[in-house]
Image (cartoon, rainbow, N blue to C red):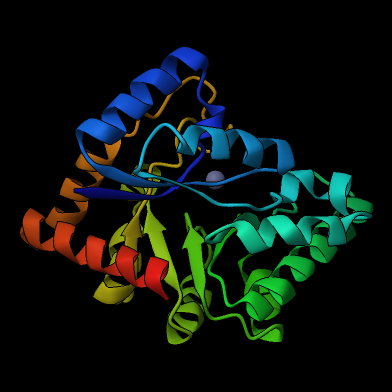
Length: 245
Ligand SMILES: [Zn+2]
């Protein structure tokens, strides 16, 4: 059994999705499929009917915030029905002040309600780590999964102090800082992700398939100097902690 705590199954092409679901079922990969918006969530729900290993999450990605900022209350029923919330967060790359404000509003709306509903949130940070951390503290959100951490080590320590979970992916494993990051994250707060199929469109030329979680898990076990089986069990324990909490 494996876990993939951050994926976007609705982004696979029709053909790749068939293969992806086969891999998920063959390797028993429990997969959280995040949503970018309402349409994406509906597709993820439909995909989830095809495999018991697929867990859909509802969220409005920062890239879609401006389309929803004026209709936020309509999103509440979807938050209620979703096991956990994702993908939400902040990303201020290449956007103007208006869109930043929209992102902040949407993010705060989700955090306030996720806190009230006592649900885990799957968080996108890309250069916004300190804003994200401050906003999480403002709403006293502590059921937090940080996806693909790319920030400074001080903010990482603050997040760790607040017991957040972190998902490690193959891009992070290539980074020179990864040893520092992995050493800092306590064993009971570590998770893995593919961010398939294309890392939120950062890798247009490459399709990440679910079975890549096998090599990510193996590489992580080497870095952590742990038997692969021990790490797999640890990841499953951590994942179950999130789902039952
Ligand atoms: Zn994502």
